[in-house]
Amino acid sequence: MIRELCEFGKKKRREVANGRIVHDALIIDNLDLIISISKDGSFKNIYPTERKTIIEDVIRTEDKGRTSGIVPRLLVDKAQYVIGYPKNNKRSIECHKEFINKLNNYTLPILMPVFSFYNNPEIGIDKAYYEFDKLFQSKLIADGNIGFLIDGDDNIINEDEALLKAVIDNYEKSEIIRKGANDQKCSLCGSTDYRINNIATHGVIKRVPDGQTSGCALVTYNADAFESYSLSGNDNASICTHCIKNYTEGLNWLMTDGQYIQVAEKNGKTKDRFVYSQRKNFNLTDTAFIFWTKNNQKCSELDLFDNPDPKEISVLIDSVTSGKARHIDSDYFYSCTLSGAAARIAVRDWIEISLGDLKKSIAWWFKDIRIDAWGEIYHAPLYRLVNAAQNEKNKNETTSSRIAVHLWNAALKNTSPPLWILTSVLKRVRIMDNDENKKGRESITPERAALIRLILNRNNKGGFMIKENLDHENTANAYVCGRIFAVLESIQRAALGKDINAGIRERFFSFASTNPSPAFGRLMRMSQNHLTKLKGEKAGLAVILDKELAELFCKINEFPAVFSLEEQGQFAIGYYHQKQDTYSRAKQNKELKDAVEDVE
Image 1 (tube, rainbow, N blue to C red):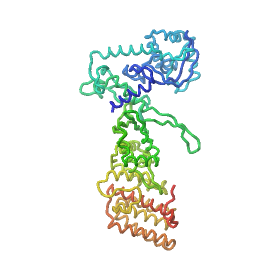
Image 2 (cartoon, rainbow, N blue to C red):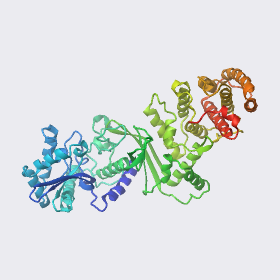
Image 3 (spheres, helix red, strand yellow):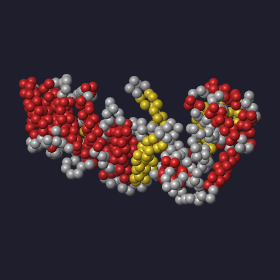
Image 4 (tube, one colour):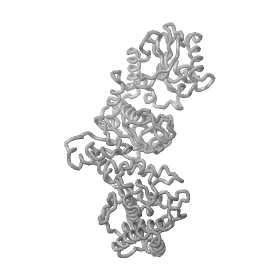
């Protein structure tokens, strides 16, 4: 995984540099504020900007982070370092002092106006501080990078070629000294050109869900407990500084790249929402799914997980089943699933697959999750399938994340989701049926039915495969029992009306789906009373439902005493299919409308 991240980062660094110098001593970062000064160091103006600039990278070269440590960058840094903001703050005083000390190590002509800016505070830094404090007090600006521009010049000072060369020279001399006689090979690139020793942490990764806001480390040895076999620090990983630079920048780009889009709200207004380009969260706050391809190809099929388009899905399935996609996509696709663990990153999954196989897997995924929903074939977004097993009263983010990891894996690699997810879905169904506040709402939604179908079919060890709609040929006991239960519910609704305090679904679904023999004995006695009432009021509807019931009883010999977990899933899907079929037929038969629920 780290090797592929390293290769990706190497390409991305060249791309982001956009013709500028690429070196381990430098990094491309945001520039948020510019201090304009004259050639004699006089302060002219301070104003916000939005641009990328090339600056000194200090996170890795100093082997410590900037959150607790004081590590200044040359010339471009936060307000705390550049102007000592805020005043009378102990850390700000120390940060500014170290910033000036580093600046004094460089005596290039381009820096003379900056020296004057600091050496003559009454015309330079004091005025800049006053304007900053007056105009830019927000934390966003205070945490932004500040650079210098000589008034009348187009280029900011830190991008001067001679200055960048001096930074690189200092870095390389320092690396030679720190490397010493150590010629250990890098475990990733196999080279001995770069230092491996005296590295405690590999740098931080930003925006890791559930991690520290200052960033998390993928590889770190900042305590003895993380070392083994008498090896010290980075000797445990044997990754050189060059590969560290590549993989951390690549991973940071994957975790943070994206753009703001406008999203319509229910009240008619719009709001800005940040959408990641190479990352999916599926509404989870503790897990991120990042992905990329070896040759930087765009895989548009991944967008279908968020917004399934029936036409695009049909084209994808057709291209896979017809063999049209055999000759394309020799590229490779990679995905890793990450969560924050305090200051570290936990890797929850790693996927490596050819792009051709990936597209086939996505096609099979949508074939396996499609379901009949109120007369139309429905493909659920992946985040809704994750939510299908979530308890709204007791949201367990860890359980949801585990489900998401398995479903993401199943979607990309055509694997079978574990059966324990089925347990979670059925538990959610029972909770809804017993919830007083959820009366009148369907407990087996299209998303839950689709997820049940996926799990049952991919874990099938013989027997009937579950179709997307009602299967008259499926005579599995549990499936037929589920259909019978749906018909009994329709009989009750037709006889007693739709405003029932607690129908048989709320009272008996859990019982009937686990212990059918005793449950259906009681249900049949109740249904006879309902049928008798229905015959006196709606004889035609009574005949239709009674006939359906009789036909279903012909397909079953006896009600078992207990249903297994898989059979409970079959029962639920049989119940769902029968209800969907009754709803579809009710569109053509007015009498049947009294036997179906109102669709929300």
